[in-house]
Each structure stands twice: as C-alpha cells, then as structure tokens.
Amino acid sequence: MNIDNVHHTVKKIYEENELRNLSDFHSVSKKDIMQKVSRYFQIDLYLTDRLDSNESNNLGNQYRIFISSNKPFNDQWQDFAFFIGCILLDKYHDSGTSESLTNSMDTARIFSFEFCAPYFLIKELQEMQEEYIDNYSKVLVLMNVFDINYYFATKRLTFLRYQKFKEQST
Image 1: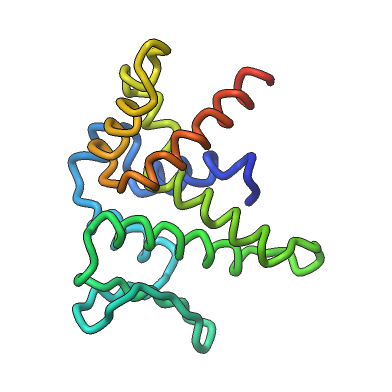
Image 2: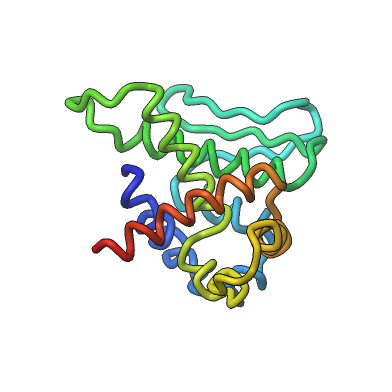
C-alpha cells in the first residue's frame, strides 16, 4: 500500500464489507463499521471507558485496537482508521523495502483520511464536485457527512485535490 493506491485499498475494504455507496455508508453506524473492519482483518477491537487515549498493539501476533469512549466520537473514528492503516502496513509490509518509519506513518495518516472519507463516496457528493463552492463549505460538508473534525476535514480536502490531480493526469 502506498500513497497512490490507498483509495483502491479502502474501496476494496468497504466493498468486501458490503458498503458500496453513500447510502450503504449511512445505513450503518461508524461503530458497526469499526467492528466489521476489525473482524475482517482479525483485529481485536476494544471500546472502553477505562482509557484516556486510543492505542493499538501487537502481542503474540494478535493485533489489538483500544478506543476510548471518553473521547469525542470523531476522534475515535479517525484514530481507529489511523490504527487500521498502521496495522495493515505492518502486516503486509515487505521487509525487503527501505520504506522508513516516517513514510509508513505518513501513509497510515493518508489511509486514515481515505478510510474516514473515501474518495469513491466523496465523488457521490454533488457539493464536492462544484468548483464554485468555497473550500470552507466543502470542509463543512466533509465534517457533516463523514463525522470528522475540522482539522481532519481540511487535510482530507487537501488530499482530495491531490487525488483529483492524479486522476486527471492519467
């Protein structure tokens, strides 16, 4: 998985979990999506009020994600996506490559942007296709539709521009 194919990876994950369009995405709670994706990758997911922060680990070749219910839900959703990205990179990382930890973390962050607000779903939103709509309004649409915070939505919008550029140049 790299920066240029992360949207294909996310789309495949969503499709294999029967989330093929925006209607499917909104018909299921984000917590249910988290549970489905965790089961799909055989990752133990713990939603708990005993933690102040979210974290993941790998003990005995079993991956775990701990999500604090004390945090705002959009933080839980965004952190879950980041941890899934980290775990996938760890599970499927080619040890023969020289990808640095920094590059892996950047890829995991980009994975989280794509996972929380998938490109194939954003393309269904008319508001995101209109050039005359200002960036602030687009950020608000992303926040509302995908349950993400302002900072995350601005980063997602930036990556969306990159994705559109890549799509147009091919």
